Length: 415
Image (tube, rainbow, N blue to C red; front, side):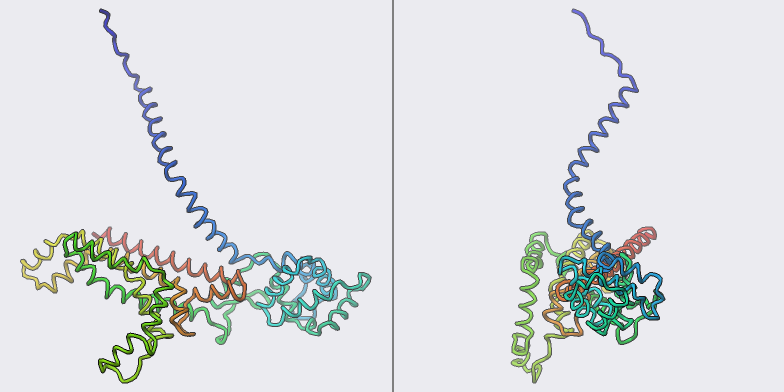
């Protein structure tokens, strides 16, 4: 019976097979993650990119008043505009076919100078003029239609916004502006609002994060000392708020915190107070509701870290002569810093973007930055300003995350 002899494997062929096998594995792994990547691109990356672009985009004037911008280009912005600018403006407004485009232009100029909206729309409805009019006659006709066309402020607003791209929205979001010459200057104290709003947003978020830590740390520690069965049952109670809408929970706090609500009635019946406490439509009500909503986001990271800390460390420290309290703060607490950092970062980032709870439970001086983003989006319909404020929030979030990563890396390197 003939014997078959196995052919020797050539090293080069084996290496090629290994490379093909690795490529197949990588291709398979990429194919598994591709749907997630497409989803993130569609609902996360693209919207953020559009937001950042819209924060510096200024298409209203550039797309509708191109001839006017060109006529104003050599203008020094301090003397009277040339007659040709009046004729160019009349021609540009006459070419606008959709009233919605004229409305968008009027709103954009009105955000620069009050009264521009009525001025533009009145002139737009009166067009077209006689095509045989000279520039001087067009100027006289427009001044007769509305004398405000003789004021420099409206022409300066058109010239200032002649470029399709502008830093004005971003500058306004940090209380800066461009003057008529294009130089960046601070706004006056009466108009400086967004720096105070941003500071207020950070203050409320920091207080909420602190209270979540003070309430969540003992609870997470207690859960970590229980048996897995008991901890799982109690963790369900911690997660119950996730099953209820934020709007519903905020409305429930209105019922609880009002002057005739459960909290005030209980305190009055127990004799702790003689008159109802102001717990609603102020900073206190906002903080109470936000802490209640965000507390699970602090407990979960703390609990996951505390479960990994061996309890023998505390017993060893006590057996070596340390008091239980000193052992807890010197041995146990430092090992939970990653959970404190992760929970604090998560709660703080979620807090700075809150809108519904401060809007329902806070007063005029308790609204956070997201409230004004909603105002610019839904009320004044100023998408550029809304996107600029959104970019400020996004930048603050990225800075906080970068600082957290840097602190974590430094601690790991020291460890």
